[in-house]
Image (tube, rainbow, N blue to C red):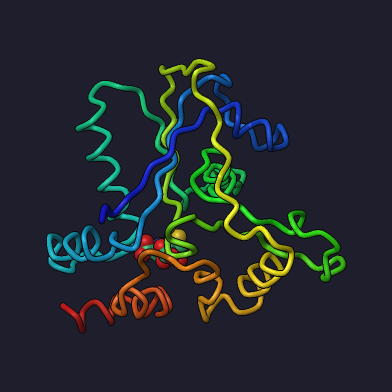
Length: 223
Ligand code: GSH
C-alpha cells in the first residue's frame, strides 16, 4: 500500500471557508494538492530514511523524512514548475500555521473534518472542543503532511469540488469521536471510529507514543 495519498483542490475552496486573515494569497482558481501520509509511511519511507542517514542527525526526523520525500517527488514529477510547498509543522512569523491542514483535507474531499459545530444540541456548553479529521479508509490512522500550491497552474470549472465522505454521520458517533479525541487522545481510540483498512504497526505505535525528546533513544535501541 502506498505511503502517501494526494487530493486535489483549488485555493478558492480553501479560502471560501476561512476568514480573510487566514487566506492564502493566490487566485481562487490556483491548483493545490494536499499530501497525507498513510500507515505504510513508517515502514516504507521513515525506517529506510533512518537507515540511509545511519541514524545520525535526528532532529525532527519525521519532518525531515516528509520533507525529503516531498521535495524529491516534486522535483522529479514537476521539474521547473513553481510549487509552494507548505508543511504542516511550519509557522509564519505571525505564529500562524502556513496552512490549516484539516481544512485543506476537508475541502479537497480527502477526509471529513468533524468540528463542534457539526454536532447538534452540543453537550459541552462553552467548552473548547478541537476538531478532528476522519479518512474514509484509514479512519484516524493517517496524518496531513503538506499543501502543494502550483502557483502557475489554474484549474477550470471542470474541477468539481468533492464532498468528503461523511463516515461519522450520527450525532452520537460525532460526540463519541470528539470526546475520544479531546479527552482520551492518548489511547488513540478516536482513530478507530470507523473500521480502518490498515492501522499503524506496533513499532509505529511505540514510536509515536514515545515523547519526541525520548525518540532518539528508542531509535538508537532499534538501530
Ligand atoms: N517534529 C518531530 C519529528 O519530526 O520527528 C515530531 C513529528 C511528529 O510526531 N509528528 C506528529 C505525527 O506525525 C504530528 S503530525 N503523528 C502521526 C500521527 O499522529 O498519526
